[in-house]
Amino acid sequence: MLPYNVSPAEQQVENESAVETRNVSVNVETDITKAVDKAADAVVGISNIQETGFWSGSAGQEAGTGSGVIYKKEDGKAFVVTNHHVIEGASSLEISLTDGTKIPATLRGSDIWTDLAVLEVDGSKVKTIAEFGDSDSLKTGEPVIAIGNPLGAIFSGSVTQGIISGLERAVPVDIDQNGVVDWQAEVLQTDAAINPGNSGGALINIAGQVIGINSMKIAESAVEGIGLAIPINYAIPIIDDLEKYGKVNRP
Image (tube, rainbow, N blue to C red):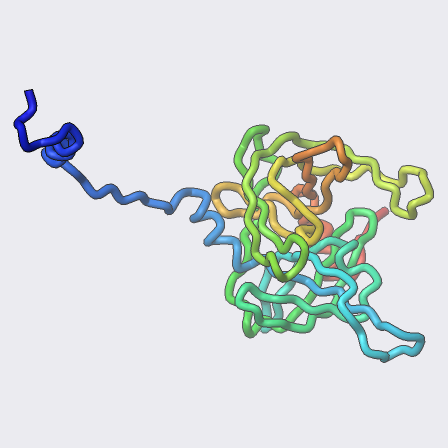
C-alpha cells in the first residue's frame, strides 16, 4: 500500500531515481569516415566554360559542371583525371578545390572512346593527392564510397555509400548518337548514388583508395541504384597516355 502523501506517479519517479545512470559517448569515427578524410580533398569540381556569342574571345559562361580527381603533383603542376564528356566543347576550364579556391585548368588530353580526360593545373595550392587502388581485386558486395559534386557547386564534396553491385559490366555506348552502338564500355556497377555532376569523381574503397572514376548512371523511370564507374586499372594506361602524349596510342 502506498503512503498517504505519495501519489502513484510520484512513487514511480522515486523508484527511477534509484537507477544508476551513465553517460554514453559514441565514437563517430569509422572506417568510412577515415576513407573519406583520406580522399575527399583530392576530389575537385570542374567548370566547363564555353563562349557565348558569334565571335571568338567573347565572354564565356559556365555550360556545365562535373568532378575530377587530383592524382599526381610534379614540378609545380598538378594533374586531374575526369570524364571526356565533362570537358567536351569547353573554351576554358576551371577547377574548384574543397576550400573553394578556383584554379584555371589546361586540357592535356582527352579520349572520347574511354570517356577520360586529363587536366593540368598550378599545383601550388594543391595539398592532397589521391591514391589509386586495385580494381582487379574488388569483390561483389564490397563497400564503396562515391565522392563528387552532384548538381554543381551547391552540393560540392557530397559523399554517398554503397557496394560493388557488379564487376566487368559491358555497357553499349552510342558516341555519335546515331542509334548504332560504337563501343562496349567496361565498367563497375555500384548502388552508391551517382547523379549529374558526379561524373569524373572518385569511387573509393574502404581504404580511401580510388578504384573507379564515376562516369554515368542508368537514368530510366523504372531503374534505381545503377551507377557505373570506369575501373581504375583500366583507366591508368589511358591516363598515362593522355598526360604524356595528349591522346591514346592505339595500334
